[in-house]
Image (cartoon, rainbow, N blue to C red; front, top):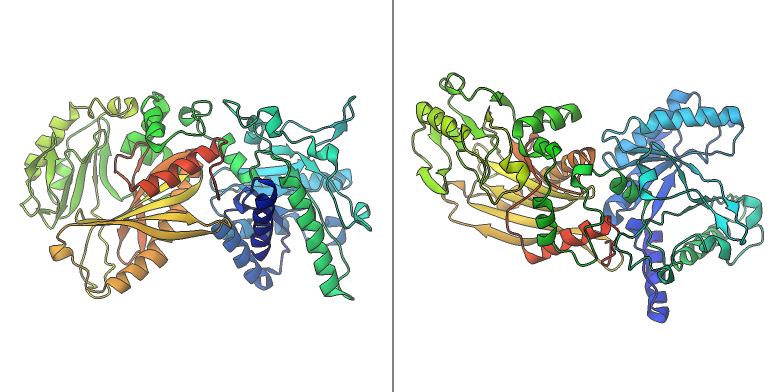
Amino acid sequence: MWFFELVTQMQIDKKRELDHPIHYPNAWTVFACVDPGHEAEQAMEWWTWRKVAQVFGAAIGVSFRCSSRETGQWSDEGAAIDAGERFLKEVVPYRPWLVLIDDEKSMGAKAVWDHIASSLVGRSPVGLGRTIAASEISQRPDGYLEVGDCSRARWAEPRTEACLWRIRHEELQGRQEILLRDEIKALLPSDQDGIRDAPTPPWSVFVFSLVLHFDVSSDREGSARKATRLLTTQILEAVEAKARQRSVAEVVQISNIRSSLDLYGLVDASTTYEEFMTLRQRLDAVDLRNFEDKIRLRRNLLQPLGVLHTPTFYMSNEDPNILEHIVALESYVVKPTHMTESEHVAVVHRGHHIFDVQLNGEVVRQAGELADPNLLQKRVLDAWNRTAYEWECKAVVSATPGVIVESLVLAKLDPGWPEKERVEEVRCHVIWGEALAVEWSVGRKGSSVFVTDIDDKGRKSFSTVSHWISQMEDLSILDPDGWVETVMMKCIPMAQLQAQRVASAVGADHLRVDFLVEGNCDQIYVSEVELFPAVPFHAKVMEVIEKRWRYGYGYDSGAGF
């Protein structure tokens, strides 16, 4: 972590002198060597890698270039695969799984490592595993070097040849200064090539490697200092190339975006949050109904992923008759799956409505009133012949009618009133695989919004930007400190991780994933996802979201974006 801070500070100092662009740690990719059978000793190291990913957003992968089957470091192929899987699950469970292989070994060993790597990336729980090998580098007639195509499209393949320049150990002997040659820098597009002004900027993925083998037994301090100097020199020379640099994980994300959501070519360096939403409203792919139809969401997206959704008593796109499924229940939720704005939704606890029931924007049943199953059935039949409002997106308006009867999920998060049950919901905005904004709501009486801050060193932190509250009455929290600790330290991290899992697996550039909290955060359930969130946000939150959104499409907007 100190190394990322050092390199960033060196770039900041250079920028003061030369107006030099800064490449923040989230644009870097680091590959770690994993030693099977020694996971216990590596636990602290793995914790550090996890913090690097969390604090700086850097891409973390596994390297098999520093392992040799011939030396017996691995007892068998299964041990290599299992060790790599344990590391990636611990450090970057739902981000792209990156595996760097050594293609300089003998043909027999190379085939073994190819098999190990392909098996490992195939275990990615979100389908974003990538095996990365060195690209062949050849010299063109004009004297410049040529590498394999690093376009966005190729990174959608399970095995990708990276633009990887191999620096051998013998080439480092006696070298204290420049490590990257001018012809290597020529591989990277520059501002003079019009890259930054292009309407759809091309990608310039360039992975360069430097493996240092120093004998530190005799001069540990001197060797460490020399290694640091060599590595920082190489990094600083690379960033001077003025390329639009991205980590391997970031390019894997854009290359695997769902085609029905892809806005590439429609976005520019100034696209705002509102403009992103307008572009989304125009999308008309049948595939998007998997998000807007809550039944399809459960069957086609969440269940195949193994992600828990709210427990269900009944759901159907064919039969709207729910009476027999609710008449004997005391607590339940009835919701049409094709409607929005909480229209026709009834939340019943012990026979009474918890919240007002709305129809056409009007309250037709107030919170606290006795629930009438026959009346609920009538309203479901009425909703069956309706659509969402005309101003909604096409995917919502054209959604197939449906209804869900599901369990009422209640939280018990107040240590000062442990038996008190409330509806508590957490909504996570995931942009390019990162949950950057979170809204926590208590009933419909109040909410807090949190957002990721990034400082000038590229370090991330989580802060509160807004609160909204009405009269809490019976929802008052008696131990606010205890409640906050549970929400911030336990519930939100759980929700962020699962939200990132869903958004990455479905190939969304931006997705809001909503969860209901059960008990003392003993379990969280996806209640719905939103492609078109209508909840108004604090200006700072929209700024963070739009910057990250643009960044994923190739436009830099500052620290960490």
